[in-house]
Length: 58
Image (cartoon, rainbow, N blue to C red; front, side, top):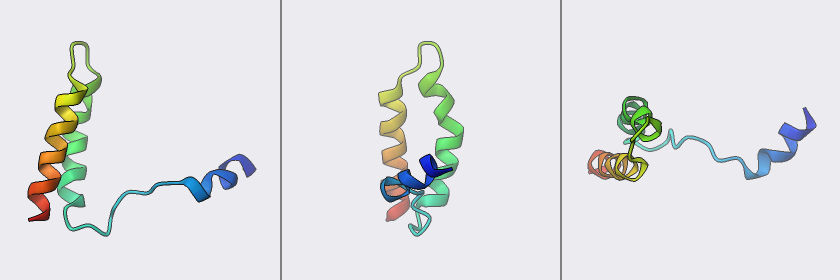
């Protein structure tokens, strides 16, 4: 348990305080498999998630 506790100061949590988070979370759930699939394009998936986040913040 101490290994987990020792890591807590560096932990990064989901940005649930952002209004865009629900939309971005849904997009991550839908698209993350594309990034790791055979022949997938992680860069394209991450860029599309970035676009989703920017649009949701407007």
